[in-house]
Amino acid sequence: MLNQISQHVYVSPFDKDRDRPNIGYVKGENFSVLIDTGNSPEHLQNVLADIEKMGLEEPKLAIISHWHWDHTFGMTAFKGLTMAHEKTNASLIKMSSWQWNQDAMEERLRSGKECQFCHDYIQVEYDDVSEIQVVPADIVYKGEMTLDLGNVHLSITPIDNPHSDDGVVILVEEDKVLFAGDADSGNFYELDGGYRAEEFYQYIETVDKFPFDTYIHGHLEPMDRQELNALRQAIIAEEL
Image (cartoon, rainbow, N blue to C red):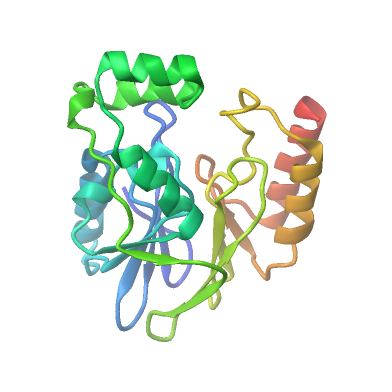
């Protein structure tokens, strides 16, 4: 299923049972892009099949929001080019050398290289973890970047957030849609999903300056600003 949420933007919805995040598709006149590649080749292929069913062109580029497995493990099956921030790519390079078997996964869990949440859901998504292949990006950048897809412009901005230190947000300028990855979520690697208050409030202050009407979190329904504020108030009440 692929939902059109604005003139140029479509979203393949998240699946909380398999920790599959929202995958974005942005259609330009010259080429189209994906936002993230999903948590497995199977996830990616499902998204691409839905794109084809809707008569949309195959994306030529995939932009990665941050390094976590559920947004990147589909990269190996993407036929176009992948693009990631240098911090994200450093993590991908590190993971590309990891062994994928039960013993190695358990050792990473014990050492803190992996968190319990991701460890568990990787085994939900993969019947055979030895099939996992992590690859670095084809295109690596630092700082901010703007892409012209053909009368559709993407503004890509690294932004400090409570979830991951490599995250970027992607603004579809003409549609005023902002893809935020999982930036509003807590830190699963250091705080077991909890928050540092300073990081959370600083993120809010920064991201609210972007001219968006629709906000796409990786694992929630698309939100307008009022709905986003309600989410934040819930986080403040429960976590901070």
